[in-house]
Amino acid sequence: MSERHLGPFKSLRDYLHALNQHNLGIHINNVNQDKYEATGFIYKLIEKYGVINSPVVFFDQIKSGGIDFKNASTGNLFGKWNLEALALGLPIKDLSPQKSYQLAVNKIEKHIDKEGKWPTIKPELVSPNLAPCKEIIINENEVDLFQFAFLQTNPGDNGHYINTGSIILEDEELGRNVGTYRCQIKDSRKIGINPQVNQDGWKFLQKLKEQGRTTAQAAIVLGTDPITFSLSGSKVAKYGEDELEIAGGLMGEAIEIIKCETNDISVPAHAELIIEGEIPLEDFESEGPFGEMYGYLGAEQEKNFFLNVKSITHRNNPIIPNQFTGITRGCLTAPIEGSLNRRFREQFREFISLHYPLEYPGFCFVKIKSVKAARASEIGEIISISLKIAKITILLDEDVDIHNLSEVLHAIGSRWQPSRSSKLIKDANGLSGDPSSIKKGRGSRIIINATRNATEEVNGQTFPKMNIQILKEESPDLMDKIESKFKEFL
Ligand SMILES: Cc1cc2nc3c(=O)[nH]c(=O)nc-3n(C[C@H](O)[C@H](O)[C@H](O)COP(=O)(O)O)c2cc1C
Image (cartoon, rainbow, N blue to C red; front, top):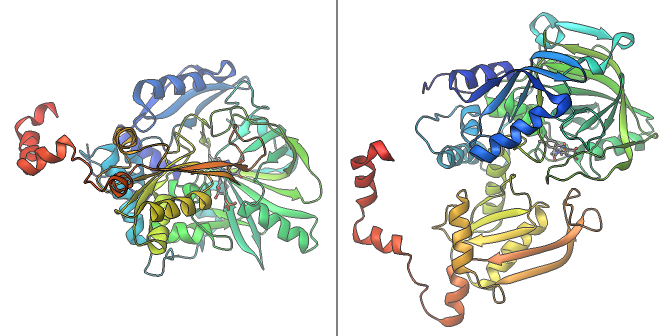
């Protein structure tokens, strides 16, 4: 495998080109999404290879809404763990998915500065001839959203959705916010938008309303470079921070931007497609249902925002990534994981690192140094409450690889006593999409202390060593020798 074609990538196309060069994608043809064949294919792929090992899928030809789209749709764009390293410019050759993912997280941890801040580079305005997203310009009267490869992913979804858009809002006073919220195609020029209550994008819209505005100018950007998209789809930037500046900082060069045709918003110039429009701030419509990230059909949202489209600009033959929500991983997660590691390490000297596997939403694995059970429980509770997704927070010892599910499950099975080492929080915040919550956004939580110390503290004895530990102590270089002696099999 070549070590060329590594990120950071300026555009989605550069990333896709690299995926092809590294043989990390597969191309399929003759896909009829009007019969949910793309969705079925993704399910089968994951059944065969697992979430973190399934290739990226290029739908070279796909039928959607009765139209045959050629080279216009992709799936599982961020599934494989080694894509995180690739996108961040790290070598991926001969590394296990876990190892390359950990390198990506380490890179982020080092990138964040001593004060815990993300270095930033301001976006740079370029001229229209240097902005591929302006190759085609469609005026309001000619806009027809049904002419693009926005798929209906599940039979229960309320129609076709844009589920990989970055919604950009801008205001002189408030700055810029970039966030990913699913968007329902409501008619040829109207799109429902779903920023959940208290998301930064939602707060931004409330602030505009408080300023007395009746509409917000907005742009939905599709097909940006992987870093910009992943910062848009995860809580790396705090409210008031600019995702594009942080993306530039991480990429080591300014994100090139260009002004919209019908408003003052600036958008990434190398994006595939830009939808410009206005969001009424006092008018709402129902949106959904939609097959959500937990893998279940969510409830219809009775009152959600919508956008009236004023113009579309795009590259020739735009590529629209489809997020098979609830099936594949939605974006690169090393940036948010590295950022949380830095934050919690600052907060608790006993904290080492955490991992929340998006493929099993609800879990959070936390690696800590050996501490008293009461302190472990305190750390677990604070982390659980501050991370909505961490409904089941599991505290683990330093020797457990938290990116290896077998090791995590093994540690839970062998080091945890449910009655002695669990803390139940009966009522706390929760993710609004959790289908087991009866009251939206609320739920209970559990902290599981699966560290050796939880047992040692009670019985006053040293927890038994694992067999592998005894073996390694006996023959420290055995594993390296095995690896070189039996290289062809391992
Ligand atoms: C593919 C994808 C789809 C998402 N859909 C939604 C959504 O519909 N609503 C929502 O509130 N958050 C959604 N999220 C999570 C948000 O994008 C994320 O929390 C982000 O931080 C929101 O931006 P903001 O903090 O600037 O509001 C999605 C994330 C991804 C990666």
